Length: 465
Image (tube, rainbow, N blue to C red; front, top):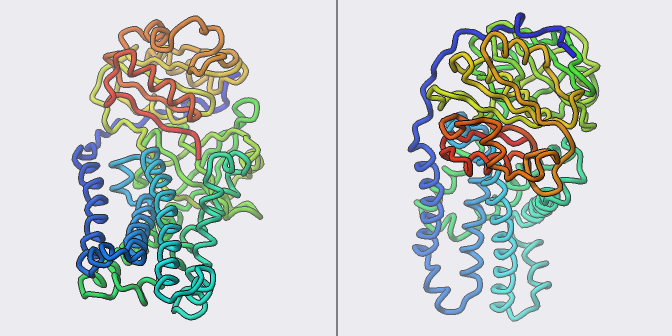
């Protein structure tokens, strides 16, 4: 199968070497997060927390748990506020993992806060825990809002568990997950109004209001304002829709001043196509060709979660964008051999990278994992890269291996790293780019490191949520 629009119409532009993100940014970000927890602990100490705790007051421990929970909730918001500097420093994969970790941790601390505060108040009032909880809900300012916010956060946590995510469509999960913003917004204000550790000193009040303002401002600017601005500025519309293979469709988009859109090969956008009902639900699709000043291309696999409607898009349909996101770019490429490991639809960002990276002729290898030859997309473009840039394409076809592996069943007698050394000799000197489903990407990344590739030269992007 040969595509109807190959690289001859999407020629790679001259490569612009951009400055890589300073290596010390992640360290600064991690230190700032740890410092915030130390600050709220110090504020708790300054407001008499230690003295109360030494006296056996459960309320003191409940206050500390609430402070940590509040701080982590706001840090969680900042992690996925799509702040460009944060995105470039850490990448979506790492941010998503930290977001999940801080989310579950803050939730458990919030539960501990509720239980300890209730038990502490009940002991002081010499009443039952349930009676005290009810009294707090109906008499304390902001507690009914906090209860509603807690219920929303419980829903978000439950649907974020791996077993629940597997049963949900992406659209449903994404919509439910957005309620986390409302949950945080409702659960925390009661502390600003009545919490001793929030209003007990000018320093406490200044810290918490600043953290709230920064978190809310980041969401409004980078999750709402910037996407709306870019969507209006570039005015993207569907130019044409091209079938690429079974259940696989490419969408070409035109717009204004696309040379000013800060997108790089390997990145993705959240897309909303204004084609009728359901337009408000965003979908993450990677660029499948090197960005150009006049044209963008995405390629979508029909996974039954709303992606099938992409094949029915008509020319002229407007698109709203949020992004670009992702760290699977050539930002840290320092020259020399390139090995790309793709599985299924994971080939799309790697295909774009093949067009952007300034490797020498015959320095690049693309290992393409698919169930069958019929599922290999972009055959025409891959042939073009093979002829004009010497790219070596290695198909890995067949069913999965019985053991956890990135290899097909035909390689069942090979160790993962040994097979990779045979497929891509001298891989230890290459930059390795990996993209595909989560378990496959993890296995391929481990194989590359076991084959001698330094961890800093293994670049990954997961196709999961």
